[in-house]
Length: 290
Image (tube, rainbow, N blue to C red; front, side, top):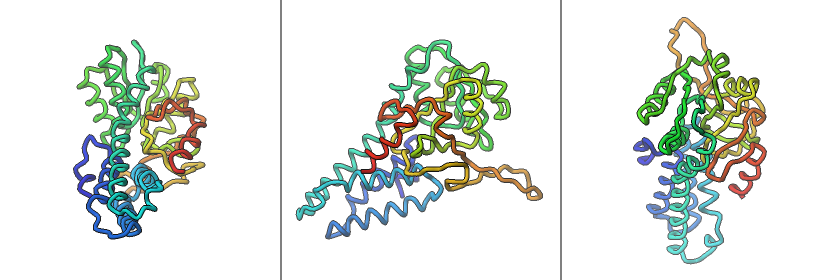
């Protein structure tokens, strides 16, 4: 768990991948079956530490598939197999760590001089993409939703402003009247699901609906380790987590922390596997998990 507790700029999912690789290194199991059990137990413990994190669950499942999907497991050379698994684990961690850099390179083509971008929620990869575009000398404007409850919008705006990017914050309720000034919407994702839709900070769905109604492109930037074997059809088909609003004990409230945006509202997904249409996500999931 140490890798998770100390992860700051490092995505929690990547920290989990590194933690599982360390389990292979530290395991005292005398058989491959025992080692696989240690990995499975560690994976379950990591997921239990944050039971509502779909990205964490997806990363753990992908790691287990990637690392154990090898004929070397049938070998009688236990030390050789362990070294092979550690090597595969380190490679998977490296690929995942480099995903953000790949996405910033691919996504930069959508940002041009004079572009006005609307973003919702806080996403490391979205911030990195915009910072990269700015470092290339592109001059553009960013509109950040408040993304309440919480301080996601303020944190995002501060990170961009520190990079010299022109930023302004708008209330979530003003997205519709602001959208006319927007050239494109760019959001991250907690998970990319089998349909090609995404699960993300609550309010993403309504931003996508408004963008679609006004003919504005809606792009998603997210790492491939967030591809999850889920197929939600509506807002009730995935684990729900609520955020505190602070209205007081005398009021009843329901405020989901995230929502589901269906693929028909998404123009393109910028991933480390390439720029994908929502329809291509299912094929990529098959490649990742089989």
